[in-house]
Image (cartoon, rainbow, N blue to C red; front, side):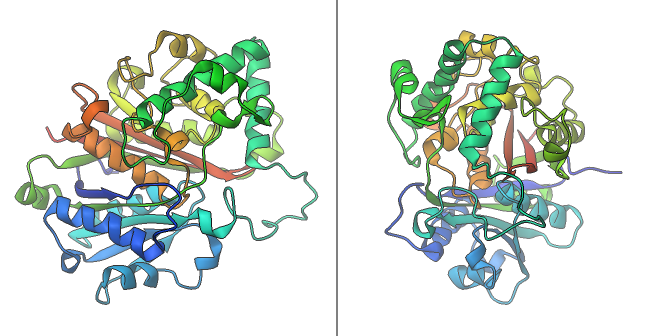
Amino acid sequence: MQGIRDRVAIVGAGCTKFGERWDAGLEDLMVESAFEAFEDAGLSPQDIKAAWLGINYQSYGGLRGSLLAHALKLQYIPITRVENACATATEALRNACYAVAAGIYDIVMAVGVEKMKDCGWSGLPVSGPLASTWVEPEAPAPVQFALAATRYFHKYGLSPEEGKRTLAKIAVKNHHNGSMNPKAHFQREITIDQAINAPLVATPLGLFDCCGVSDGSAAVIVTTPEIAKTLRDDYILVKGLGVSVGAKQALLNDWYDYTSFEETVTAGKHAYEEAGINNPREEIDLAVVHDCFSITELVIYEDLQFSPKGKAKEDIDSGFFTLEGGLPVNTDGGLKCFGHPIGASGLRMIYEIYKQLQGKAGARQVKDAGIGLTHNLGGHPGHFACAVSILGRRD
């Protein structure tokens, strides 16, 4: 079976400023990100043959693809709304890539958007029981990942103080990177002491261990490598895509202890195989991952084979994941500095990798970046979905 590797190219990308965007509605945000992508690619809405819209908030369900059609004044083209929890935006990209690789369309678009500040939700919305008798205890996301942190500390012999300081270093790193990004919601540095002593949200996670609530949109334009060559020299190739959706294993099996997320492990393996990556720690030049909480980023290091199991602390202490380290992670500030408008986050990550691989990331540019990875993990407690993408410069 032939995979996606080098069969599609990204020729344009756009991203709004993320934050409390009271100045803009859904359509405004989509226009802002999409027209940056059009300008970047040297294309117009009339060039788009099909589109995929990633949006999560359930009140928009009845509108579906017409949201994007009206915003961009698209003329009767196929538009599909997709949703896959926090992997929604990357899912939109995956569908766009497969359509081009299959030879169905030559130029398509993926757009992700969310207005979280207006809806009143502070995370993934839930409208009711999910095929459940609702007898399981409530576990909001901060509680779920606080339990994961406590379990990780216990399993790998970290004292609460050691564990909290380790997580604080992740938050400090991401805030440093975000301070150099004009599109980030939060653009200021923090100290280790500030992170450690911040108000608790769910022990041991404090305020700076948790991502914020934001509005935002991002968009990419995808085409064939042959067409890409006629549009620009610095197009970016899709090397691998992996998606993994759990079947409630986290709720049903005692072995699922939240110190590893099998959905991330599986999606990563699929993407690596497709991209021809054998040693992720050495072959991936940078990554933007789903740091909804600082403990999540730590576990992702191990699940994606950036660090050996139980050894992420050593890499964090050595600065391995900083901009100057061996494998910079969350170079744009991550969810920690952008917040998490759920339908947009994955494409915001794609935008950062796209710019980094082109050498256009400004002060946070990673030297000689050739291969980049994005990662999303989301869902309700026990209902996880993960998406991993791998992008690379043209040969």
